Length: 403
Image 1 (cartoon, rainbow, N blue to C red):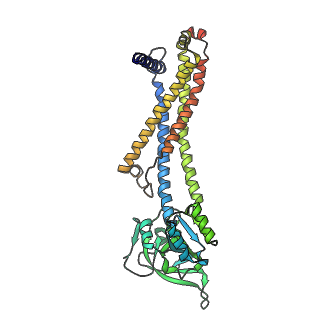
Image 2 (cartoon, one colour; image 1 turned 90 degrees about the vertical axis):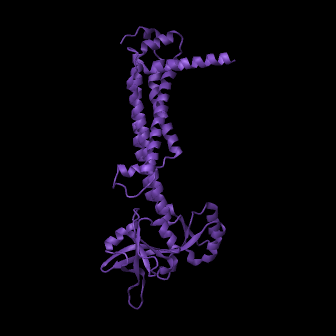
Image 3 (cartoon, rainbow, N blue to C red; image 1 turned 135 degrees about the vertical axis):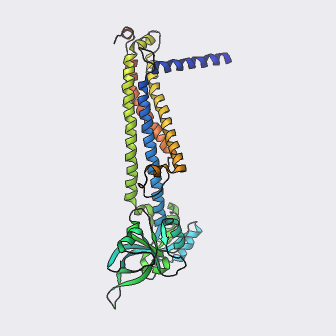
């Protein structure tokens, strides 16, 4: 049995050696055909482009979406003024979901003759929120000061000519003082200036402690901010017990922005796959030329008994091996770049001043599988025409073929 196995192994090795020499050597000189490196290089560049594009876009999505989720909370329950909010909080806590009270509405913020319409957010556990969302891009006055502090974005501070410690007025346009005929106003101190480079939060959103504005804003604007989204079953139970409740998931507020980012990611990825496709056409051209050059050899192989399907499989093997080897090299180069970026922050070194925030490079396993699969399909399709052309060569005419 061992002798037979060794014989089969030797035959297989000789077969692979023959196929390798048949593919890479030129018919006239027997030297290596260095033109085969062009499709290899194209696929490597294409896979590298797709992998790094997906890694950059996935990292940006992770950083931005995490900030969006933190700043707007994973989920919110609204219209809670019509129910017993403490009962709702206890029910959520019993089901593993923590909540905190919040309130938000549109108000006018004024400094002298300058004013802006913004959304104010009052948050019960504001200290933890501030550290989680605004750090480290936050400048603030002494935390021990107990004045009515409001936190505003850097862009809004510039527009209103505000600095830390300045006093501002906020006014609710819908709550009118019946004696003066003017909107209700409240004086606050700029306790912090944050820099959240995401959407319009630096310009159109301000934040403060919940109890500072809970009496200033209408009660109907109260919310319960959740530490995680509600699953379908829990949400169904909540709505059954508290039918007036409305639930808002953070992605609903930013659906257009999220869709635009995903579309941008897929669009840039297609550019990389186009490079792989071009490499596939290059491979098809080189393989077609190789078939023309090897017509006499193909005729000899057919004459000594090699089947047409075996000839076809040689060229299919060439396409598959080109795809697998070059894809592996492209992916390994991408993973090496990602590892170096994690250690030395290469993205910021390559694009100094061009990025508004830090983000990791993330290449998911599903993307690696996708890159392998697409490159394999494209190159196998590219190899079909020359392989079929080689398989249908007449062996009698091929032996005497002269170019």
